[in-house]
Amino acid sequence: MIHKPVLVKEVLEYLAPKPGENMIDATVGQAGHTLLILEKTGPDGEILGIDLDQKQIENSRVRTERDRERVILVHDSYANVKEIVEREHFKPVNGMLMDLGYSSWQIENSNKGFSFSKDEPLDMRYNLENPVTARKIVNEYPEAEIKKILDEYGEEIFAGKIAKKIIEERKFAPIESTFQLKSLIEEVVPKKLQHGRIHCATKSFQALRIAVNGELDTLEKALPDALSVLEPGGRLVVISFHSLEDRIVKDFFKEAEKEKSIKILTKKPVTASEEELMANPRARSAKLRAIIKNGKVEVRK
Image (cartoon, rainbow, N blue to C red; front, side):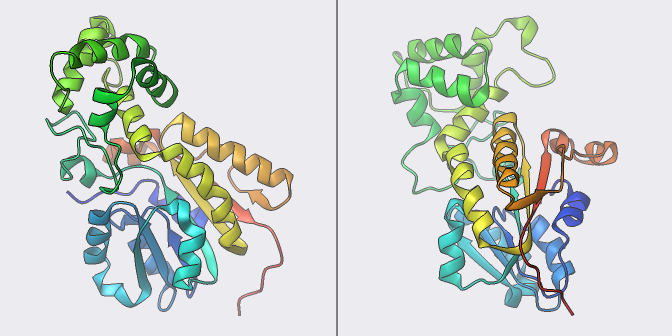
């Protein structure tokens, strides 16, 4: 399955890529946004694509083959963007995109248990060198820690009951698969609340994915470094998919604007149009925020 990038029109509007400019796609995935940005920055603008998932780097390499002279792909975390830019001598940086969602490919083809729509091992790692898996958390972490993860990262109101059930179940046998965990959660959540707008296991799976990959810590580290590598007049666009991420982005942008280092371009988060939601329901929770870095800007001739 080819991943369908979200908020394409809005990304191009706020990132405003121009011919000859250098851009960073900090979570390149399957290069959906990258390919569109390359069209705008041709013939000689370059893109630095970063992804923590080695398989996604390979996917991007295939999809950007036609423009391989203008694309640098790096298997790393975008938390290390400052070091990556220095190492790759990738300057100037005129704009950066952070799309914090995981891709359709990871759900459908990675076999890592990101979704409970298929029965897969409880892994959820973007980076296979990471020693923490979802299986490790549910089978080895103490009840209080599991409750904290589900509560803080998933905002799950039944976090305590789910954590308790996990501890009870793992006494008999390890919890190995997505279907096992989904079934366990369904036993805990009252039947009348199981089939609302989202499935009752969605928040717990989200929380485990965030915990496994340290996603919120990564975002908090990356934002100031992203700002530091941008040229004056450079733009940063961030797409988040749940309230915890969006809050971090919003608070960072507000603080940076107070310090007069940026100008916020989106007073409220930009969301998908009705037309896009019809074509791509996954965009329903996407929120885009954008800023421009202050400072003297050279006028392009």
